[in-house]
Length: 425
Image (tube, helix red, strand yellow):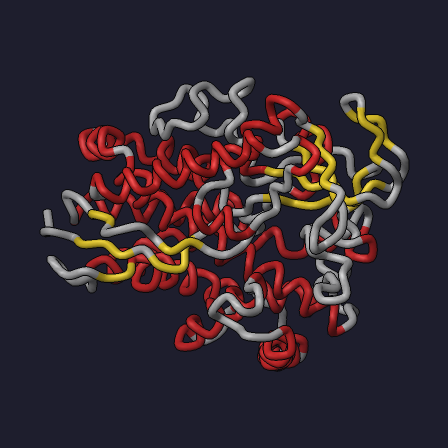
């Protein structure tokens, strides 16, 4: 990445830091999509971790909320599902949930036990170690074909030609849907998390109309699978699972949304993030090229550094005394994974990207407790394979300019990242 781009980013981050530390603490509001898009939210979390790790924001478009910003505090909330609920009827897992414009869908990540547990169990065999061993050669073959098709010496969008392609192919396989529909799947995933007026969709009404098409597509797949013998794809598992075969259509759709976004956005944005992180840290890129055995460690470090989902939300089910603060029943609690992954009390040099950390899997990107990401090993596998194949082919991949980041305080990702591959190995 060019020095000028890094200098501009550093200048923007300094201005954001000055602004953050000039604000009264009670005015601090981490949930600012524009800050995430500009990559200038870091000083907010730095200050909250140091001065007010259980912070109350009284005024926000989606109502007041608590921010939990330290690693161990996030773990404490994430593993206490009795007092901190994920239930979609209480608001679900997103800061926007529960408002008239973002009523949460029923899905197992937005449920509490016992219903959560039995629904999760239905789909978990699709990403079991045995299933991943079967999928690995296919993922590798696709990764190789994608990389071999890339132009050499020409600028192109890595997000579009690589990250979306690999994750879209894998997700279409998990659903056993036609590969030619994979881009439609990627589009639907983007629509789920898109804010109206930010480029992809203009209005909430447009979003709801797209949801109707999305729902209809998967209802057709459900009808095909429910009338056929059980197979190993996610739709068949849901259609034949004892805990899911009698789901209401809205609940089926909610679980499809969960599996689409969970299987697409997070892995895709970490693949893109790995390219950016290595460009911003050329010493680490050199270390990786010299020792490809560091790929598994690099994958874990990238997942921490990127934190593809910035937050998860819970709702207090009773009054809770937490680090000297009283969180009242019904109040919204935001676990900022993006902040916990930069907690200097738990992670050494947390703002640095270090691909050979002693304990690279010490991160909170997948969550903890009963809601820990069901597909975390599949995400790691895709990242590992794509980098094994990259290092066979390209001495270096160069990021050109600043990437365009997603306008969201939930999905921490990239809309576009232009790169050039100067030559093949």
